[in-house]
Structures are given as structure tokens and as C-alpha cells.
Amino acid sequence: MQSCRARSAGTAVTAATAGYTLVELVIVIAVIGLLAVVAAPRFFDRDTFAERAWFDEIATAMRYSRSVAVASGCSVRLQLTPTTYELRQQAPSGGHCNPGDSSWSQAVRYNDGTVAMASAPAGASSSVTATIVFTPAGSTNLASDLGVTVGVHALTLRASSGYLSQ
Image (tube, rainbow, N blue to C red; front, side, top):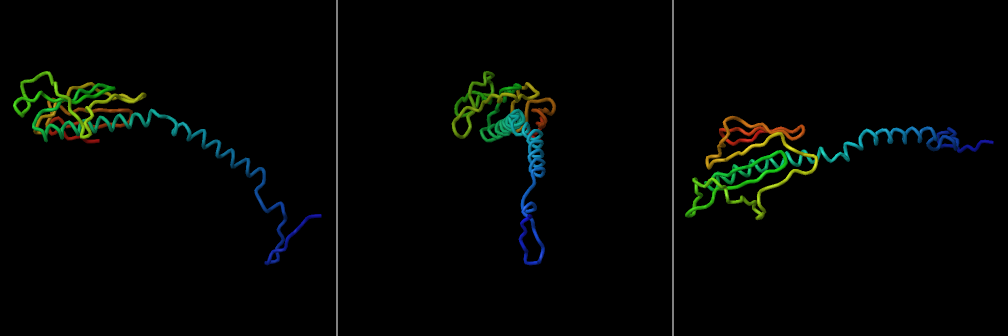
């Protein structure tokens, strides 16, 4: 004997049609599992995030170098390797920078007082090793534009203006 409930519209609904079948539940679980297998590596692959972080760090260092050079009136040297960067200025002399100083002895500091230098996170490196000097006019010592890539991210430093485009 099959139990039935009467609906107000006069149709009968059996207990078997009131929920999900086992087949429907198995299919939903299989689809979720398939999505997890395909999507999970994207979420747990840290190299993609490390590359983007290092790319942003290099771009920020270039912009900051140019800004400090223009604001201080002293050239700033950016020493860039695939896994590190460091910003330095010429030694001060009489309240001004000493343009004859070739040792670049003065470390550039960020606004919070930390020295402007960093190392790449694990799994990230840039494509270039370069020594870039930003002048008080904002230009660089480069003979031509410099392209830098980190993973799939790329930027170009314009030699004549110090402008950075991504």
C-alpha cells in the first residue's frame, strides 16, 4: 500500500518524490569532486601569487626610486637582480648630495624607516639584472628602455623619462 497526501489542487504526491534520489546526490558529489580536482591547484599554487608579489615589489621600487631622486635632488641607484633589489643614494656633502661619490653609501629608506631593499619570495624571479640610476630630473642612465618580466607579468621602464608602463 502506497501512502499518498492530497494537495489542495487535487494532485497526489508520493513519499518517493518528496526529496532527492541517490543517483542525483551521487552526480552532484561527482561534479563537486571534478571541480575540486580542476580548480584546487589554482588556489594552492603559491608561485602565481609569489610572482605577482615580486612583480609589484619591483614596480614599486622603481617608482619610489624615481620619486626620491626628484624630491631630494640627489640621484638614486636601483641595483636589481633576478631575486633582489636595493636602493642607494650618493653620500651627503654640505646639505646636498655629493655627485662625485661613486660608492653610493647612503641607503634609501621608506617612509616607515625601513631600508629600501628586498628579496624575492620563493618561486619568483625577474628576467633582468641591471643597475639603474634615476637622476633628479627623473630620467635614467639607461641607453634604451628596459623590459622586466616576472612570470607572465611585464613592465617597461622608459629610459628618457623614468616612466613605468605595465
